[in-house]
Length: 294
Image 1 (cartoon, one colour):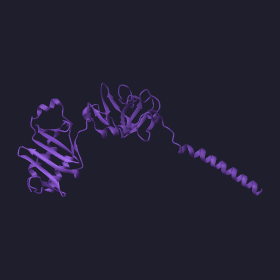
Image 2 (spheres, rainbow, N blue to C red):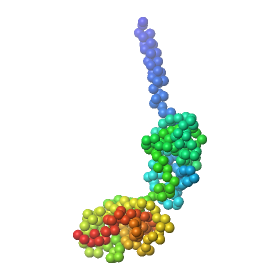
Image 3 (cartoon, rainbow, N blue to C red):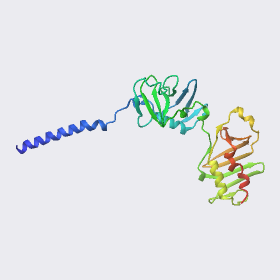
Image 4 (cartoon, rainbow, N blue to C red):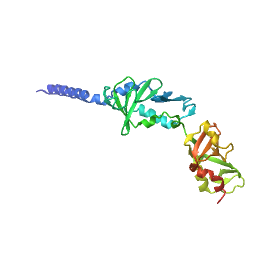
């Protein structure tokens, strides 16, 4: 066989191998849209405006206003909402485990038993029973069943209090410049100078460990619930303690009202009222006295 024929044979063989390789491996490299992705493709996580959760005859609705999620006109727990959205709109599509309605009853995905979640009045999920750390789900008017990872029925509460943002205060402790305490004994103001905490009145140094402990408690202060109007009668009209903290070019004032077991905490900036267990406030309630002792 001549060199020319060998070259032609080599070229033909090479082309056939390339064609075979493309046919074999290209489908693996080119992602195909899953049935789940096709259903959710019209939804964008960042542009969602409403979430409706319904269980039997109860339901709640969360709405996004000025880029803030709210429920009953109160600020909602952003972390909890983001988690729910990420579970429903995962980056990796969930496994499809059934394509017919034969196992809907077994997975508790019937109209009567399933919890329902609707995003932006566009798409509704039926959420059934748990399977390990996942739940069975399907879309409204669709038979296919998917296994959503990370989500549980407990993430779909229809109790509004479970969705409220219970953060009373949250700030970077290192940004605090001044703290004031006011109780029946009077008012104490503490300022930060040259990286040391001093009483504003006489520049006397404050016990640094004690003030740091107080700031640590204040910087991540969480309530057990928001206070309802009917509960306000259980507390006195005048606060037992008032704390004002200045940080990062802003100021927040909290008023603490003593009840039988809990304290009512009022945040002056927006008037929001919270309930917090007394044992959670031990460091703050004793601060005016403790900071005055070496």
